[in-house]
Length: 489
Ligand SMILES: *[C@@H]1O[C@H](CO)[C@@H](O)[C@H](O)[C@H]1NC(C)=O
Ligand SMILES: *[C@@H]1O[C@H](CO)[C@@H](O)[C@H](O)[C@H]1NC(C)=O
Ligand SMILES: *[C@@H]1O[C@H](CO)[C@@H](O)[C@H](O)[C@H]1NC(C)=O
Ligand SMILES: *[C@@H]1O[C@H](CO)[C@@H](O)[C@H](O)[C@H]1NC(C)=O
Ligand SMILES: *[C@@H]1O[C@H](CO)[C@@H](O)[C@H](O)[C@H]1NC(C)=O
Ligand SMILES: *[C@@H]1O[C@H](CO)[C@@H](O)[C@H](O)[C@H]1NC(C)=O
Ligand SMILES: *[C@@H]1O[C@H](CO)[C@@H](O)[C@H](O)[C@H]1NC(C)=O
Ligand SMILES: *[C@@H]1O[C@H](CO)[C@@H](O)[C@H](O)[C@H]1NC(C)=O
Ligand SMILES: *[C@@H]1O[C@H](CO)[C@@H](O)[C@H](O)[C@H]1NC(C)=O
Ligand SMILES: *[C@@H]1O[C@H](CO)[C@@H](O)[C@H](O)[C@H]1NC(C)=O
Ligand SMILES: *[C@@H]1O[C@H](CO)[C@@H](O)[C@H](O)[C@H]1NC(C)=O
Figure 1 (cartoon, rainbow, N blue to C red):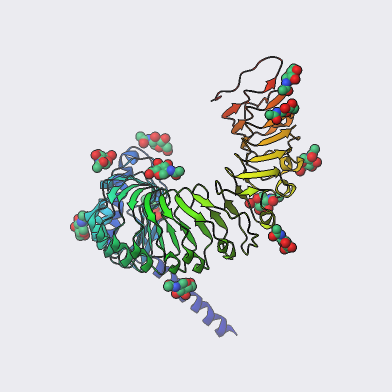
Figure 2: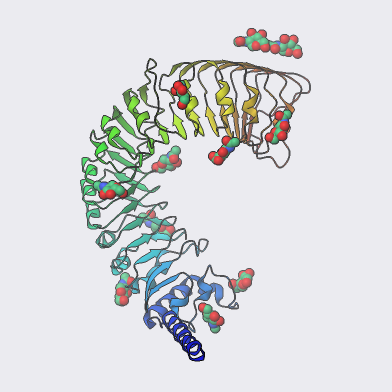
């Protein structure tokens, strides 16, 4: 017994020793020095006449008397620094990209995250070229300007590149083909212009390609159909024109296809029905035409379907039986006629519904009032009747837009505080405003103009309310006139 416990104890000691030995591998001197120099470039002035216990977003643990592999935000593989996670460490310092110079001496880096640090100036191409082991490079949310340096496209091991939310003004060059291992390329919200190079089709490992909110023009290159591993394709808010590639459906692994806010024309390609994994299809605000195909509603995984703001036509004679469970649906200006389609009542997961600018008639459906949606937009139709009282009991309702219909009657008592936007302009609502309207402290926009509301009770929002815009003009209010039709803030 005694020997056994002695034995296990010594095993234990050996085990603990070896663990701490692994943890305290001394990091390479030049790498530690590079990191300390980087810290000094960042915070040198700040630390000069101050004690050491200042919070520096994690970099306060970096000092010359400890091993750099034990510092916060540093990743090592044995003695070598392989990762730096500097997400939002110095967001308010307004440094230029020259502060990164010491980092470009750490050639073993595989992962570099310098996102959200408001770094200014051009992307340091020559320095980044030094980091040939890089697999992961996240530079989003800075103020990098100028173009994308060609050296960047020599990082052949790179799998993840995110340059989103900067001020890069560039054409995506055909040298992009150098990034052979790339799985994700994100360039959101820059000033990328020109056309997408055909070479994009050579990045056959790409799973995610996102360039929304840029100024890219021309045709969606056919070579994009070679990206068979693609799961997310987001080209939203650019200037792409001409037709969507007819065979886009061969990208069978796509879960998100967002082509909204472009100038695409032609019909919705029928090949899209091959995309069995599609969850998000956003085609709104283009110039697409033709009939809205019913097979869209047979795609079982579909959750977000936005088709509004095109020249698409709804076939009002077809009864559809959706196989999907939508959470978000926009059929704005799709010439939907008659009552609000009853199949929508079976979409029990719906939280966003936009059927504005159609030819809808009839009453506000009871089921819609009871469904607890977050957003209901039915403006610019011919709906009529009064509003069901359940509508204003809904805990989740944040946007209700019913302007320019033929609704009438008094507003029911409001027993929800979730509403942020309430637009009822140009109907024929009458009677006094419910007092409870002032209890909605989250209300931002309130437009009750051009109705027949009467009485002398105006909404009186408290000092803590968020209200930014109120319009009660063109009604039949009486009593002391209180003009609050303009922006209050
Ligand atoms: C010294 O540190 C304090 C907070 O610890 C800070 O408020 C002050 O601005 C610093 N002084 C200098 C000169 O950086
Ligand atoms: C250096 O940093 C380590 C933690 O990384 C800390 O324990 C030690 O006290 C620091 N030494 C000095 C001199 O600040
Ligand atoms: C980039 O930003 C830096 C620093 O803000 C500025 O000096 C430089 O002129 C800018 N360059 C371009 C091409 O806009
Ligand atoms: C690239 O690395 C070498 C060797 O570490 C270094 O001397 C050089 O300054 C680095 N280049 C840049 C542009 O940082
Ligand atoms: C579209 O992108 C432009 C930049 O190209 C941006 O200024 C604008 O806010 C974006 N629009 C939307 C609706 O996101
Ligand atoms: C599509 O995804 C499946 C499952 O993730 C995967 O097995 C298949 O290889 C992918 N197809 C392509 C062309 O990459
Ligand atoms: C809604 O679903 C029920 C049962 O799942 C079905 O009987 C009914 O026909 C559906 N209604 C519409 C309009 O699709
Ligand atoms: C309100 O919305 C949340 C999130 O979308 C959802 O989980 C919850 O079930 C909704 N509440 C009701 C009463 O529908
Ligand atoms: C208002 O809502 C609360 C909580 O949902 C409920 O208890 C109360 O009965 C409602 N009041 C009216 C007048 O409907
Ligand atoms: C609006 O409602 C009032 C009664 O509340 C009615 O007298 C009037 O004719 C209605 N106006 C329109 C345009 O329907
Ligand atoms: C407007 O109010 C006046 C006096 O309160 C009333 O006589 C008139 O019928 C009202 N007009 C409408 C259209 O409700």
